[in-house]
Length: 270
Image (cartoon, rainbow, N blue to C red; front, side, top):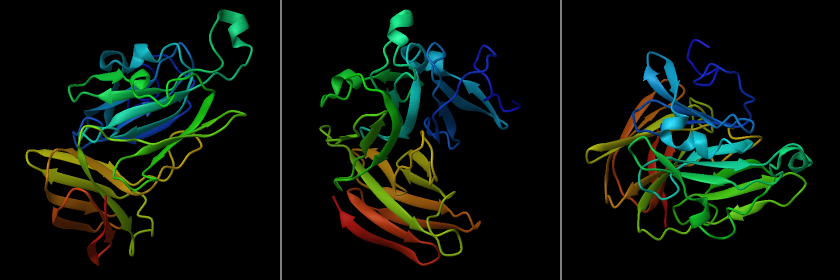
């Protein structure tokens, strides 16, 4: 309550379900997304400093677009590798007779909100093909680069139905760099580590997280979209143990293993 996340911008309690945290505005501080019941909107909380948060869902374009949906899993990911974290949400009602009550669907379309970098998101689900925007009774949502091409693919589960695996095929020519952390003094999976990259006049940060979305675990490797940049000046890791280390001159189009206190190794190209 003190942080401003317990209620909506109108001061109402909501039926929260899925949650994810990430630095979606590249401010260096993580924000929070929370899916809610229909007619409640997704909550999108941006840090306002001092440990406080403000719900910016309405002005960002996420709120009204999600008001008639019942949200479950949600994840922040850089879907188009432009250096800005986007928000994917899966939806589906809990009552299969709801249409008889007020015309809402039991199956509902998922959403992919692209981040334009100026505090606004737009839902592009109907534009990305492969049946992504078809109504489903969505529940779990996770991401991972299952085909090792440097971008993030989505796995969605449905209630009493099939799982859907959506391969992300980049057409804009944007580049990325991926890194996997292995703790030695920290826990082996480096849960809780923060990684920051610096390139040109830009920076990004990511957290290694154990669980988020809804009953889901995305891959632990971190993916940074870089647009057309061809070099990362610095990569800084804040390990859970309190140790900080820095690596320089990473090359986009590659994946790296970072072992705590033992250095960084390029392990693959894509």
